[in-house]
Image 1 (cartoon, rainbow, N blue to C red):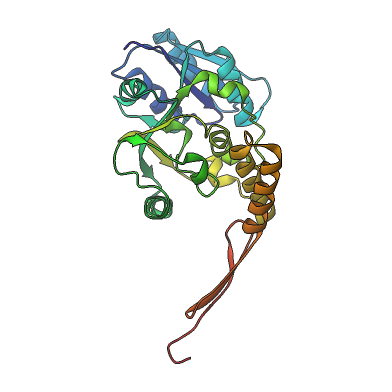
Image 2: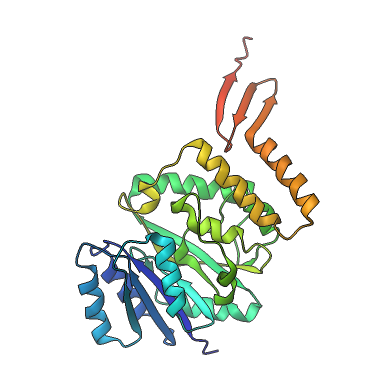
Length: 292
C-alpha cells in the first residue's frame, strides 16, 4: 500500500522543539507523505526554522496565521490545505519513531477508520509518574491496552476517560473530521472533544510505542486549568456527543440521567463514606478504623 498521508503539525512558539519534530517526519521509513505546518502567529523564530526545512524538502508546506487563532483554528487551517484522504497528527513538541507512519499505514488494511498507538513519554519525570498512574488506572479499570486490536464499546468508555493520550498518536480518515465541532469548552482537551464525536467509527489500537510524547511545563495541557463547573459541563457535552444519533426522546432521558449521576454520587460501606460531586471529585471521605 502506498497511501498518501497528510501529517498535520501546528506551531506556536516552540522554536526549541520543532526541529526535532520535523526531522522525525523527514526520517520516516514511509515516504509518501506531506507535512502541513500551520504557524499560529508565533513570536519566536519558529517560522525561520520551518522555512529552512521547507527549502530542503518539498513535501513540507507552511501556512502562517497573522493573528493567533488557537489550536482549533490552526488545525482547521491545516485540514483545509491537506490533500490526502488520511490525516496523521504530530504536535510540534513531539517526535515520531522512524516507523510511525509505516505501521499506521499497515493498519489501514484492518478496515479501521481511526488508528492510534502506544506512546513513550519523556522529559519531565515528575509529571510522567502522574501520567503513568493515569494509564495504569485506564488499563485496570476501563480497557486493557496490551495487544493490537479494535476497541469495542468506545462510546461507553470515552465519557469516563480519554484512552487516546495525545494527538500525536492518531491517524484517521480525513472525511471524519469534516462534520466535527472544534469549539471545545476546555481548549486543552480539544482532542478528547473530537474523539467523543467519532465513537460510531472503527477504532484500532496498535500496541507499539510509535510516538515520543514530550511532557513539559510549557505545554498547553500543563498551562490550561479549569474549575469543576466547566469540567462538569464539558463532561456532559462529551456524553451528549456519544448519544447524538439516538432517538431524541431517549437521548434526553439518557442525558438527564447522566447529568444526575455525574453531579452527585453517594456511596456508603462499612469502611468509608464517599460523596462525589461533579466530575468524579471525591470531596468527602471518612475512613473508619477497626477500633470503631
